Image 1 (tube, rainbow, N blue to C red):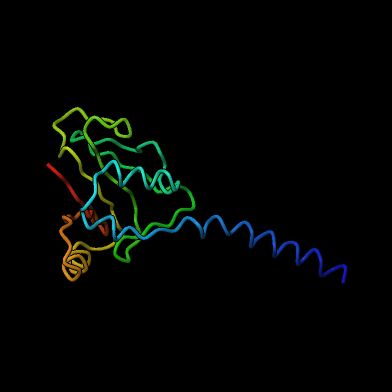
Image 2 (image 1 turned 60 degrees about the vertical axis):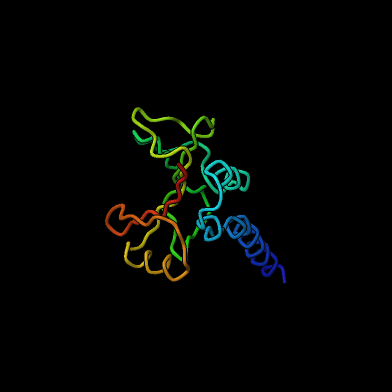
Length: 146
């Protein structure tokens, strides 16, 4: 019996350690219906602690790229999210690049999948998101407002 308690304690500790990881999963399909602003999209992700609050990169067109938070598992249309991207003019959540901003408000994700697979899913759902090849095995799913 005495040997069983340390094993049980270790199993319980590992199980409890895994709970925060499971609680940080999110499906972003509804947000990628392009019916919100970049501010609202990012504020929701930040309040749930699903993204790192500081952009990892800011493009010249002002698109800010954010890593998913450590332990967060984000998906979009069933594909794993590599990065979350966006910009909203005059919003302190975002930094401005040195060129012309892409749009007044733009947001989206970069997923691990081919552009043809992503486009097929977006089309099958009647989505209006822009699908763009972002690199080998990477595709951007993007919403923008003028």
